[in-house]
Length: 162
Image (cartoon, rainbow, N blue to C red; front, side, top):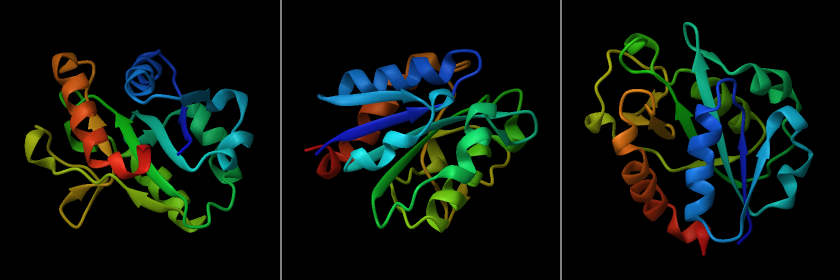
């Protein structure tokens, strides 16, 4: 199955996390959304990586292309959000919610929900039915847990990565 990893980054943190994901998935390809999202339909499975800025906003490069998402026609899509659970505990990975809502509206089948019990934060609109709508990563404060969390998440997505 072909895997496309699309990320937006301002400080490089989300790109660094996307590179970790890319290195763990054989034959996956990374795309910076600042260069466009035209290739999204070229892949069987998508991993979309976005950071949260300010009081719950999605990263600027994603904001510039989010209304251009193609018709995803039941395509499996997994979301990964980077955020700062210490400084922005009440909006932790909230930017994922906009991405989730837009992907759902375009027909995507969102996969890769994550139990929030392993995280310390106050509030997040990126939780639906008791689960994060994607993998939250706090690479600023918990970099030592990033790779382990990604590996565990990818195991749960193994049927899409074969």
